[in-house]
Image (cartoon, rainbow, N blue to C red; front, side, top):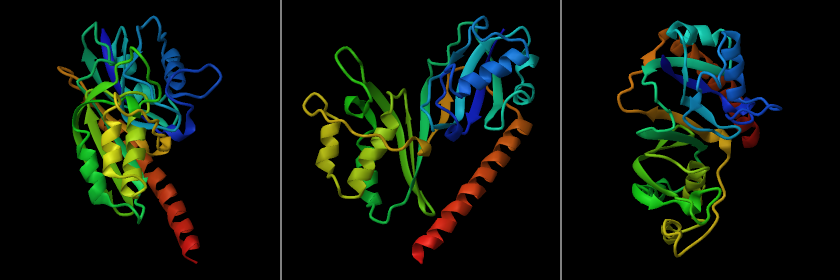
Length: 266
C-alpha cells in the first residue's frame, strides 16, 4: 500500500530539505527514521512534494512511500525516531501511482518585521496584481530559454499582526525562490524605494528583465499543499506536540526580540 505523510519542520537547523550526505537535512533525518523501522526509501518509491532551501520552514510538507502496513508509519511511530525539529502530524492512504509533486495548489506564508516606513496599503495594491496567470521569470532564481515560469496565483493576503507583517500566497505551483523574491519586491515598493510602475514591469519579462534579490529564508513557511481525493487523518497527539514546540520557539525568539527592542530604545 502507498501512504502520504504531512510533515512540519523548523528550517533554521537544516541545510535545506533535500538529502545531502555531508550535511544535516530534513530528508536525511526522514531516511534515518525510515531505516530504523525497516524501510528503504528507494525501494519504497519515496517521493516528496518539493524541496525547500536552507532556513525555510514547513508546516505542510508532503512525502509518499510504499509500506507493507500503515501502522509502520503512523505519526507516533515515526516521531519516536525523529529529532525534535521534525514532526509527522498527519497521514493518508493514497493510490499506488500517487506522486506528491502533482498538487492542486500550494500555500506559502512569509513573516517579516513591520518596518515603520512600509506603506502597507501600497503593498496590498501591488500584491493584488499578482493574482491570475503571469510569467514569473523575474522572480525566479534561474531562468533561460525553454524554462516555463508561467504560474497561476489564486489568493493573496497581506495582514498585520503586532509588530509583524504576514504575507500569504496560494497558487498552482511556484518557481525556485519565487515567494521570497516577491516579498523582496513588495518590501521595495512598500518602503518607496521602488514605485508601482517598476513592479508592473517585473510581470512583463518579455520587455523587462531584472534580477530581484530574494528576502531571507528564515521568514518563509511552506504552509499547506492540497490534493484532489486525498483525505489526511490528523494525529491529535502529534499535532498538539507540534503546537507546543512552536509555542516554545515563539516564546524564545519573542523574548530575544523584546530584549533587543528595549536595548535599542535606550
